Amino acid sequence: MSSDWSLCVSIMSLHLSLDDLSHSHTLLLHFFTFETDVGLASGIFRLVPTLDEQQHLQWRAHYVFTNLEDLKGFPEKIGHLRNQQSDHGKWEHLREEERRFENSNPTVLIVGGGHSGLEVAARLKLCDISTLVIEKNERIGDNWRNRYDALCLHDPVCECEHCFDCGNQ
Image (cartoon, rainbow, N blue to C red; front, top):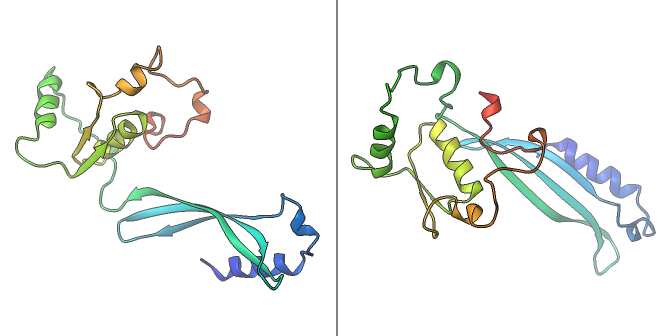
């Protein structure tokens, strides 16, 4: 994290009195981005002020969340990278071959075929990463299918941010 973040915490702690700590709205929220060997990521953390045994102010993490945004070396197969060849009605046969993993093992194993598991599988497929989804129910998607009348979201599309978004293609 940058020195700007450290400075921000120091300045905030200088301006807080002990009375300020009694208010539940006192906190520090910060968004950040970072890079790892395998990808680009983002995160968010929330710090809350507490008092130690000597009644000195300390900032403690309330939560820290990170998200892998992009895998290095695996560009999504969209736009000009998309397969331009027609399958001439053979997609079902190609899908069955892909599903059987006859010539290779899957690169990624996803446990759970609910909406999150399917979203990750779809995103990885766009990155040309072979993925096997296993599900305890009889069919992939049954945990949703057995609970709801329709396999759709009830929120407006503009409020739904999933890792696989057809609108960005």
